[in-house]
Length: 432
Image (cartoon, rainbow, N blue to C red; front, top):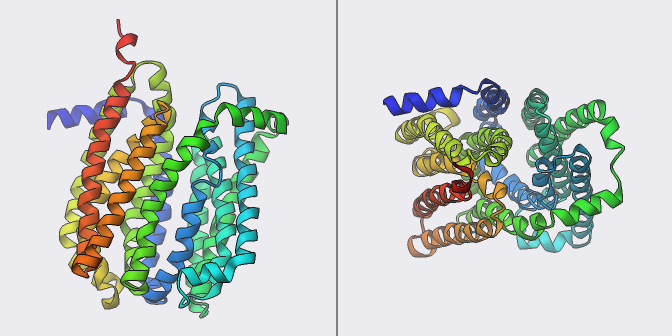
């Protein structure tokens, strides 16, 4: 217990650092609280089938969004000169716009064929929101890193809370008006669009002078300088995201769209809030880790943050797993009973993933992108294999989720040992 207290004291010494984390965590927590509080209302407006159907479209958009910027958004934090950084940001947005145009053209030309691949039971409209969502995500990803570079955490907080609130209001309002799936899909566009407008306005007001240095020549120069991001990081990130979203496709096709709807609600209530909070911490840690790496203090910082995050997240997730099967049906209604079962199975895995995935930014800082590719490929293969084994061997979604949880937990425990090893590299020469 004494060690745990000291870890917390050491971590809290750097007040600006903690303040930055708390600002983003507060915003994302508020946004997720809005989503969680609205869920009991939404589950009585929308059916598991409607949740599952919308999840198909959002899964495609999520998978493609991760490479919509060519992964150049990650490089925005790295240049020492502001002129170089703004050109990397411009390059990232330009690639996202090009990705939008290409994807929109493909959907317009081959929409019917693509729709048949994912099941004719789904309404055609779900596919046509994919491209706008990809563009919105791409712009948001680039601007988020630009704002983080300049420590504008309060502005990021406002945009996130505003976008979440608008999305929730649209979901409820359009649902009560009887729009069904169309209402859910529309909210997925309108909310992020408003959040992006807030970010664009802030950048325009604060960075007009530096934006004048953006040029095609300089963007191409930065594209060459950081070419390993699209060449290596894109593959790893794509595989990681695909491993997260592939269960949606497989669950919907093997166990039915209603089961998928329950799984999606589980993600929304448990995993997604943790992911958003984790990404907020990771954004601040990315900058902190970068500075610590230059000063030879990276390993010590990784150790402290890992201990603290473990102390904060694992105990409450264990309690959630114990009581989920009784609590969730009461809150969301009897038709959502399976949500409690899924939470019980996946809670510990989500907790461990929350802690260890935050530390994975070390891989980017140390430019170990080849390791990222290999790890994500293995993670993807094990998640898909676990899901398929549960279906073909046991005909049970319960067994499929259990195998996914066990395999994922083992791999993320391995990841933290690997990250510790990477963080230690080049530390010895820096010491006297």
